[in-house]
Length: 246
Length: 324
Ligand SMILES: Nc1ncnc2c1ncn2[C@@H]1O[C@H](COP(=O)(O)OP(=O)(O)OP(=O)(O)O)[C@@H](O)[C@H]1O
Ligand SMILES: [Mg+2]
Image 1 (spheres, chains in turn cyan, yellow):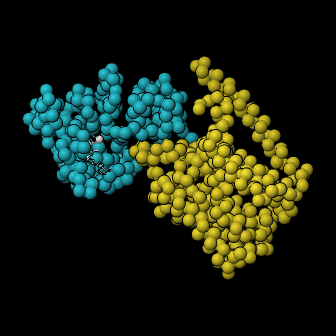
Image 2: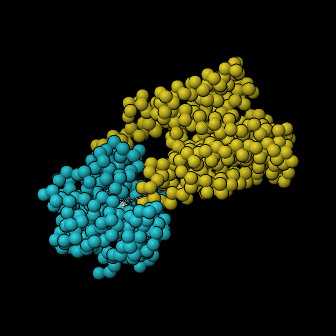
Image 3: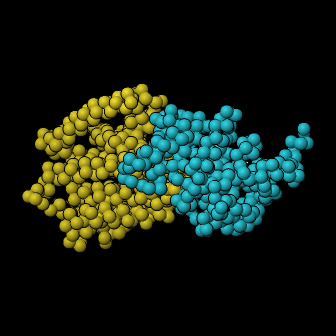
């Protein structure tokens, strides 16, 4: 297995606040990695640095052996890193089909979408089960559906690495199970490496092979779901509050 | 299966219907200079120029998002560039026309590249002052532009293929045909993949970046295309009226373009074009009361925006019973 992403001494400060504190970790090709941690731990900030939205204060990010820290988001997307946002972002005035097609076109712009590109958009609608909403305007759909559309549009850009920020927030248990199955498919059948930030603990424990725990911007633990769940520091820092009241 | 056949059926009848509508409109425009007075012909030329200005304005503000208030300045730069190239540098109109368009396109790219880094209101306000700045430059570069005295003696387009453009009718048809070509090109642009990219930036710039769209590049492109078209129309205007005055390109003109686009409905292309026609017509009809003209007009505009902020096209959609 080769390394797809290498993060070295990554740091981000906002004014005086250290949001991400000298973190080093790497991600293997084909892996499903989870990142967890309490609110404000620095998960989204880490994603924003990998995807090029924030410039790191210090440290480097390497993707497929090339340094990407400092590149613009669209360049990073073109290199094969897709993402979804914690706060849903969507092209509200587009139909679901056009939304996904825009993702297909974004990397390979033709004056008119080619038949292959239309076919590709159809396939993704099929895969993400968005077919019934095909012609609905995205703005008229629920937040949960818009999240799926964001995922579908990210898939349309043919990423090799996907960063998913709280994709399952606000979903019902049934929807979470469906999403988990879908993510496994994306990972195993399409060969896309996943980094997943999630507060839904059950979901991340089921999905991920390895979990990194952040607290106050620092990695405080790393290991299999089992190891992390039994880690004393994690229980103290992260689950501790619940224990107190238990 | 059934749904697609149905969709195809409707699109075929609507295709025929649209074809008929377009044919009728074209026929009306073709007979106008034959059957109406010179005055009406002049007004229609002005309406055509404004229609293309408003349509090109829609490329950035309607389709891509950022609001600008300087379209009149690009129109003016095109007009003066073309006039000066023919007057001072011996260019023929047929060379000065594309050169003015390209000059304004490049100039807008130069301005747009730094300015479009500003977000929202800051960019809009910058364009407002830029527009005013250009007006002041035209007004005060007396040696070059004759300033407030106006630039006179501009040549009519040279005749080609035996067609004479120095008559009112000749230049009418020139502007008419040219406007149609530009509108068709703009239509193809907004329906193309590039048009989809523009819309994605308008809808959500951060998501557009996340899927790999170079949003700064496409914003500058949309800005420059709109400006370039305004430059071309400026050139046509200069050689049609053959007299340029700085006030033609003052903030009122920029504002008028914004109003026309709003009245018609931003982001629809056809809306701003129709809006330009309506506004020009109303302003001409109200010439009987010059003092009241702008008061009535302003009140009417506010009423339109309160009733339907998406303009005429929004109103049509609502009447057709689509969405609220
Ligand atoms: N743009 C910003 N400007 C200033 N401070 C920021 C900014 N973005 C994040 N922060 C701060 O950085 C810290 C980490 O925030 P981040 O959003 O990365 O946390 P998170 O782990 O994603 O939390 P959550 O689970 O609530 O989403 C917080 O203290 C936050 O207030
Ligand atoms: Mg977050």
